[in-house]
Image 1 (cartoon, rainbow, N blue to C red):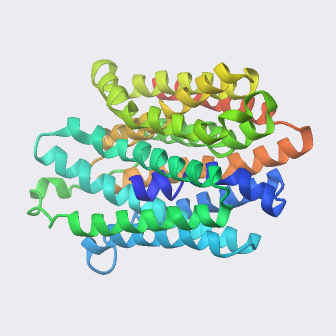
Image 2: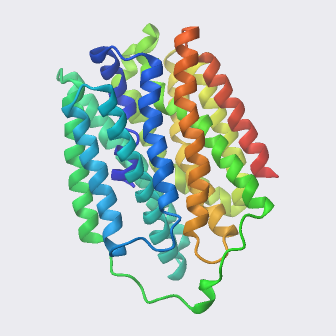
Length: 362
């Protein structure tokens, strides 16, 4: 999770301001590159709906992580926008496969050994990856490195992580009992509403998650926070899944999802309506402290509603999430280029999160 999502997906955010300055990228083009990653994410999620993937199953997870590492490093070897789009697309496929395959493997194994509470440790890897990569980018930024050096350094770290996973992935457990082979009967109303809420969450979080560091660089009062603001997001994300899954066990997974979505909406609003050191710090903490909790709660709720193999359900939720992610950055870039700020797209994102909370509670 640290390699495939924490670095592979989210390292674009702290590197983006340097890319915009070096290559003259508009906000629309920056959003387009981000959305290419999410189109790939959607393709990867659809691929993961297959009951069986070709080749040895044990090789797919480390293979996806290796692809993520290679595409990350390759971003530093070009200055072409079409190449950026192609590489982020391929990286998105790798991220989705890594998330779904790793989550299916870990959550199933934890359920079978009676340790579901350890799922939070699995999802906290995203926060660890964000923190490590953000600290690496900040260190290189202070040393005067360009965006190419940042991408390549993060790619090397990712490749080391992929090698560690290839070594650590265990042999499969014995086949489950025949009862687990029961076929899914499809989406019921609860799962349909959860999928819609998950898609709105994807739209609601992604604008701030993509452009937060760019917002900081563009606001003179808070520019000094640029090297550390994404580290704050990562530090808040690492323990957040433990808190939200604990709350989910107390008040219900869907209710905890609704509370987290409403909390994240406050953070999204703070990023544009409270443009000082305190406000942007609140935005970073609330974003980091909720988005992985929401990701985990959505997948856990999907597993609760699944009949038989949970992977297709988790993949379907990820597809809905991916659609929201695709729309968000492009729309935000268009509106920001036209209006001169991220205020309006952030208001739309917060409204989406409030709607997600309402749907989840239903």
